Length: 379
Image (tube, rainbow, N blue to C red; front, side, top):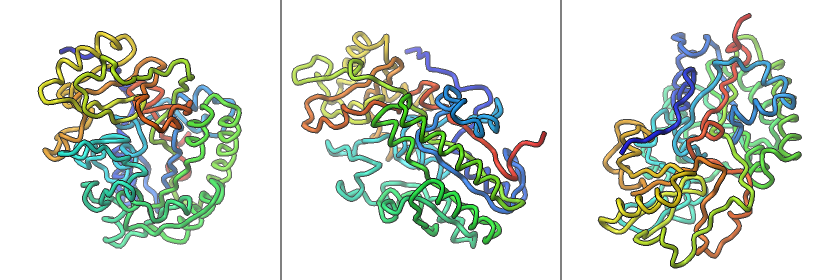
């Protein structure tokens, strides 16, 4: 089958390579970024480059600092669990194994939430995520490593899976987190500091990225980051990026599947998320399931078999044999303004979300890569 998937921007770098490149800058062998004495990585959850560009008047500091080349491509799916794991391990999903928001435990019909379900669904942070976190490796080698985030994330399974080894520092607001990061970067030469900012994503899911609330939060963050750069000591480099962007999907663009729907025939389990369904099919039924979905949804979604996704390199290469069966037999990746829901589920709360992400569109997958402090472009 011939696939016509969107091409990444020519200048876009891989989000997976960001932390290894920051470490090169700290070690005196820079490539992407200038040399730095300490490095601060600010991850703004949900701030796609397209979202930022469309609202440039509300983020004048960030857009003034962003050149045409300052872009990265996120993972597939373009979802927090997968993207942050790739960012903080430096390897693709085909190696670390976090292949989406909800993914199959092979040999079962269970697809845990891989962002929030570690405790409730029994995932072992030390084994289910298969790659060693870069923060753990660097801390073990003697580098000061810090994670600055909301206190509620301190002991989560996901934090242990991808951020263990670093010293966790809790701070309530984005401004407080950035102030702590500036202080630590000056106090600990050679430090690698990761700052997590989830507020925009939370608002976007609930009210949409085009909402007034999202714009206010963007304006506040823009001002926070302006003050943050001004507070950085000489020689400290900072980078602002994101795990994914976002599209707004109104209620009338939701596609709901109910009991007896022909598109669910021979589908044993529906997982993934609304913009990227992962369908696990009955033995031998994947080709027929894919054909039905292409006929019904091919104008507004990319329909891929597992083999198609692997051949297209969406999960990286190589893919470990133990990771391969975690990926859906058939993948439905939305390209129009649409979100897919299994309406057979009792929990309808996800259907109230407006902001969505996960698929291959530029709005979801292309993120900014904005250099501040010692990393800022000269001239």
